[in-house]
Image (cartoon, rainbow, N blue to C red; front, side, top):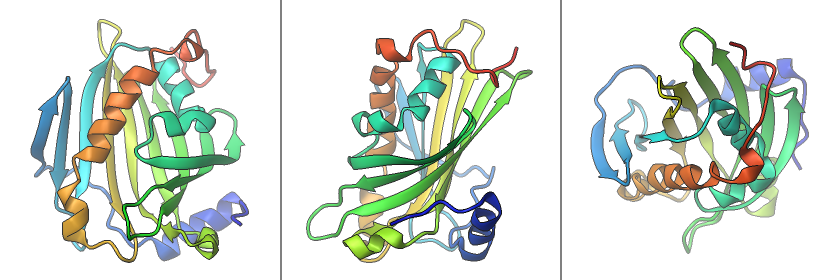
Length: 218
């Protein structure tokens, strides 16, 4: 089973074993869905058979509620796309967490899993929260018949003048052995759309209201 090591070791693993190109600011996004106030885009990534995807939406919620949602790993299955189970592995304050998540894969493929590392960063001037997502290269769970996901992405939640959040969710993921790029890309709109739609619904729950976090300074 996965055992969390020191920050230095994790950084070394990320440097040595990352197999996907870094997400860049280069545009070339193609819009493939626009419904229910959610826009979905995909783009090709050099050196990969798998497209990156991005979804955007304006959500009636405050930024502390959004932080609370992402930190609530135990409830991630309620809104994470096709998630079967999750487990918090490490947390440092309110700005770093590492968790395990198993995702369902269609027959005949094995389920996938990721070890997700989130880093929370708040820009008080631009009123923007950025949550970096890194999938760590740890193959411990493959012994259970699961296949490791690799990739990276981020959440961005910017506070608009009226108080709503402009939210962006972007990921580039390699689903691992067995699933070809052409098949994965056929369904590239489902994950970002369903995830964003579920997030909008989850943020209305009472348990995410009236939250405060010290790093969300004015």
